[in-house]
Length: 211
Ligand SMILES: [Zn+2]
Image (cartoon, protein in one colour):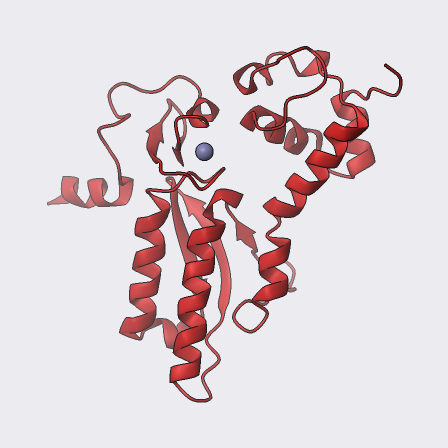
């Protein structure tokens, strides 16, 4: 077959970092043309053998758009505006949490409508210890209704695969923990048997240890 690209060539074409590209393939939902039937869990070890065709590239383009929450940013400009300052943070978490993010944004929008003239906005968000942390305007974040939206998003994220949005739980590897479904749990590597399936909310667990 003509025109198969290596990962490096594809990354150049897509104008993204090579590591970023390999990470996307390692999730396992986009299976490269070569080697035949490569599983996501083997992608890191065998990334030099990978060859991608034009269809693969198109799928990766669509995946990049999904990972950038492009449609959310277009549909929720009233409650989310990306900060453009140097060092500003964005939506730094997996695309599987789109539903959690949207529920939060719908909640914020409803509160803005209820409180005349209020313009509460989400500023940024990140994944930490497998949970979603969202940051909205300081003043309004002190209102109990907004705090509840944050709590709900946090709780939902720990039950939602950050890659695909299916039901999930916190998975513990030896150096990483992420909330993933059965299909995507391989991305943490070998599970750590002393913690995997035992700690399901690391923040709550740490608080318990302190008592
Ligand atoms: Zn998943």
